Amino acid sequence: MLDYSLLAALAAVVRESSFERAARVLHISPSAVSQRVKLLEQRMGQVLVVRGTPCVATEAGRLLCRHVEQVGMLEHELLARVPALAPDGLGRVTLRVAVNADSLATWFMPAAAAFAEAEAALLDLSLEDQSLTAERLRSGEVLAAVTDLAEPVQGCRSLPLGSMPYLATASPAFVQRYFSEGVNAETLARAPSLCFNRQDGLQARWVAQVWGMHLNLPTHWVPSSQGFVDAACAGLGWGMNPASAVAAALAEGRLQCLLPGQSELRLPLYWQCTRQALPMLERLSAAVVAAAKRGLV
Image (cartoon, rainbow, N blue to C red):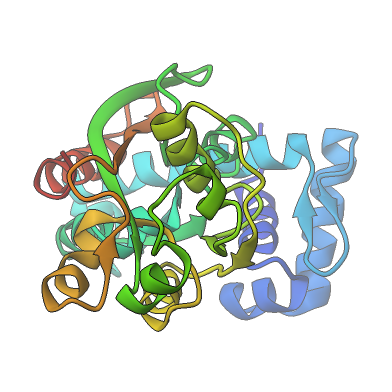
């Protein structure tokens, strides 16, 4: 039988990335947390946490943390149905979810707010590129993810959310400076582009969609969704921005599309979560799907 006081210590260390912060959350000493994790590792016969800054779970540790989250949700459902089992009231369950930055900055937050308003639950959102969020799900680090992967991760189900339309935009001054002769492969090879991080391939995908080729684009790295829009407005470079995020700037003339009428790139998104029947996770999924219907194409 698993000792859930030991599992709670492990989950806190992984969630907080430190024994000291886990101790504050659990209201015990760091040495007590360390002793519980060591005892659990002895019983399991393997290392569950790689000590460091931050502390990181091993594969076995991640599976145990995922189990703790799932049991916590089931226990919460039981206590809600039988209040006498929880005389001091229901505690809060934390759900870990991976989401891409553009979704978080546009349509996802209303889903999170609607879910949190109705549930005694907290959300631990981790930011990752949409091409990599499924890896967080596959490794057991999160219970659900917004991803561009349609094929279900093993043990999960995949729900289509819709497509996020992106527009290639830049400031009028930038367009005049770099694209006065038109937007083509030659001018794009000279004009600085914007990229969120090394996993961001939207600018390259747009070039391939329109011209059918790969270009080595000069790049400014801007790891912020709002900063991405601000950088384009300031004339730092051109980039692919969510249509909803730049609607106001386009209407006000602070930005313009590089190829008006034909420059949209649509990114299909999916919601993947564990197949296990967890009512709380089902309600989160329903909130996400409803928000996606309003915010995506």
